[in-house]
Length: 225
Image (cartoon, rainbow, N blue to C red):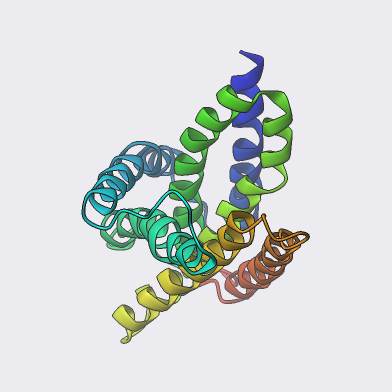
């Protein structure tokens, strides 16, 4: 039970934080919960299927080179996981009438991502124990949130733009880029000191995420109502 609480706590903290940041027109808690469950269930299922497909048709050898780790980080883990979240936002949240201001792109993307991160975190924490739970609370979980904010920022803009496809794909690409960079530096930890790159990527992602949140708060359709 303690491990489950430890796995859930950072996810809950981020959800509350993003909900508070949605200043001007709160989303339905029921819809946000459903969006969270889509991330926890459907995104996980899609990710698992895509991983199995990749392993079947394009297996990587056990002894990865740096180039192979790059492919794994960006084009396997980063692309597959962020794509599985993206399609939940794109085809469930974005078409909704409730999605009525740019900030909604952020909150829906974060809810999907936190659903995904919660399930993933449970497996890591059960296997690794409390030390892993504490480490991931300050690294992997905020990383997933920052990827989601960056993707959601552009998906929020896309909803109200004539360039919807372009902006949606920019959001997806940016999430993949930061996710891939974060994982790549962790995957090549056989190079002494290189893992610092993951923390630099995380910090940069958090800084840009805070700017994205403030920008959409300023651009709210409900700010002056």
